[in-house]
Image 1 (spheres, rainbow, N blue to C red):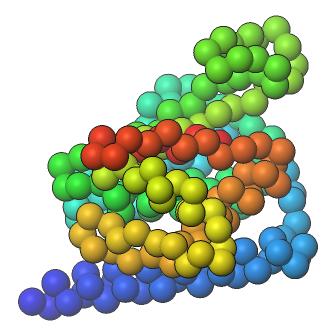
Image 2 (image 1 turned 45 degrees about the vertical axis):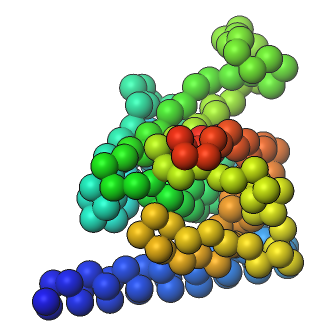
Length: 197
């Protein structure tokens, strides 16, 4: 009983902390107080850190959380923002995945002017596209148009009835755009979703 109550307290505390952190970050972005400070860092290590941080949450729902990044990807980006993006997307993926499912991280190198499927390594204008794919509920088509509207107060409950404030994805989108990038969503209801940036 004590263990169960402690788990509930931990989950509630984590939810409150995540909400507060997202609100503060969003507020800083809106008021121009969140500075874009890019440095070179190892993205593969950042992903490993997120997996370590969220592994107990995933195990609590019997979800396999893993990375397909088989090499070190060194990027020039704002480390704190990338951490927030990865944390928000992975937390959402766990939230909307059924017990027994999985959440996977992938990455590939692309160039600025390439098409979706073709990768060129000769050009210096390279970037890393990172994706988080879940085997969860997917996003209903009508919800896709609403999830980025701050005034809509739109939020979906997770597979274990986890609540959200509907702010995380808005923050992720704005942070990706701060880097000159975009957030892409491919989702199929009942099958899962892939979020890439």
